[in-house]
Amino acid sequence: MLKTVVLHHIFVETVIHFIFQDSLMNRKFKRPAEQRTAALADEDVFYLKQGEAALNEALKIVESEDGWKLETAEVIKNGDVIYSKVLTGNRKVFRLEAELNASPEELHDILFFRMEEIHEWNPSIKRIKVLKHVGRNAMVTHEVSVEMAGNLIGQRDFLNVRYSSKSESCVYFGGAATRMESLPPQPGFVRAEDGPTCIILQPLQDRPDRSRFIWLLNMDIRGWLPQSLVNKALPQAQVDFTKHLRQRREVVQELSPEAPQ
Image (cartoon, rainbow, N blue to C red; front, side, top):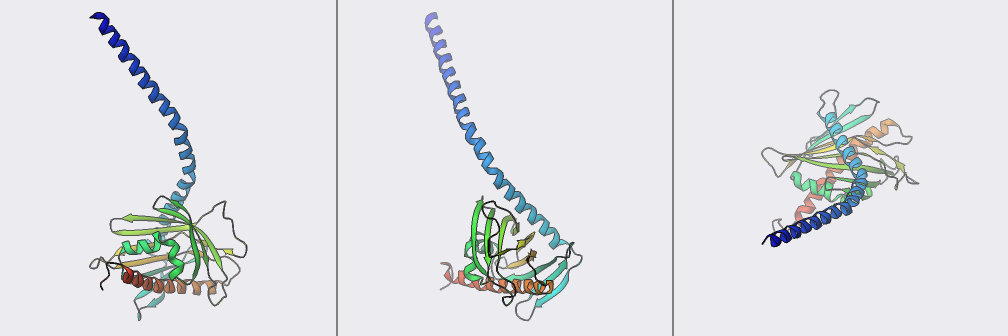
């Protein structure tokens, strides 16, 4: 009886030893992969932090009350209003406010998740490509514009980080110029710089299927251009973009399987 107990004890200790060794080996094999993943994620962390910082800084500009002046009001047509403000360094930024016949979720889909389709409905964009996704909330994009302002402003390209965030029923987009070693400034284009910039989508209190659309446009167009020309072209670009966005929303609604027949 004693011999049986001793043999059983030895067997149990042997099994436990092999289980422990196997577990230790598994941890040793997994650790290098985890370290490589962490190393590869450094670039992603950079873009996430840059996008989040751009959104926070842009929101501070939007929420600041001092210095805003009425730039233009499309009140006769649709009630859109644009305000302007001069920041430190003499850069002029523009804040468009409008109401759109779409929920924040619908606009989130059109403006963020379908980013590469924007050139299909916005004639000021020649092409736009997502170079890198960082989870579902951030991406790096390369955008090429068409010539603007009666060909007085030539083609520009933009390399931006774009960041998306939700808070309760509101959606926020932030963006800023970024860098990527694989895509330096391109021959034939002036690389303009966005940011920090943002878009805020808020459901109307009595109409959650409609949105209050707030867009801070903050852009350094670069190149040798009269500032008066730039300050005229940028708010007009906001008006045009919003018009095309409304048209796109109508097309999407017509194509939706849930649309009334």
